[in-house]
Image (cartoon, rainbow, N blue to C red; front, top):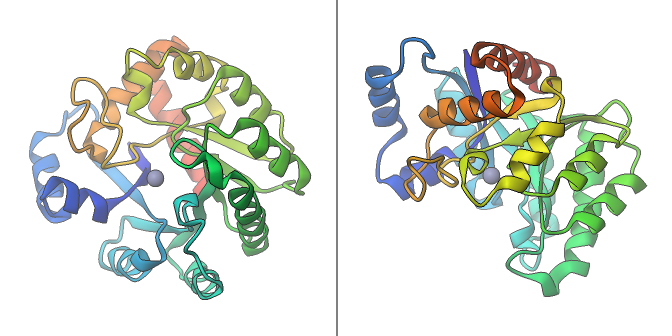
Length: 264
Ligand SMILES: [Zn+2]
């Protein structure tokens, strides 16, 4: 009934000290029969050192798909070899997207000009690959929009993942000449995230994706705990409330969006 469109399975295993197999078993046991289990997972590898493991996961589990990208936190360490490897992994049959990559000025605002140059390069690689793109855009609204408006995005699918911005930023993203999807995580349940709820109000149901960004961003009532795909129902419930639609309809719509964006 739902797919977690953005999770980091290996980080979850490290962070929670629980194997993915053990998690799946636990979820099978505890799942709400009205909601069911995650049908599939998009596992995101955004450190080149993790690409091999992501490929292994996607080959081991039928319902684990992979996305490969280089996170902006590696702006000062990534190499041309990393980009060459990225292209190799993008060609793998279980790879469904290029990303996450983008801009993040939260921790390292001084690196902004270098991040922009890297973002432009990765955007070009991603567009050339023909894969859907997964963007991480945090506290860099005007630079992000400038780079995106400068590129030819027509007919490309873009998942702006773990949305944390303002309603204005969401509105500007939706105006881009591309097939835009906005991903919502547990942040939508946080008390101090009214901006994210206001943004969700603006996003048409046909452009929303459910994601956890596991192991981060666990929704209330699990905030601060390791987050996993079994928490999607808390996110779906909150989004349905915001959109004033039955939660079953929200699931149906997001499942359909996932099929359109990722082909799964
Ligand atoms: Zn992520």
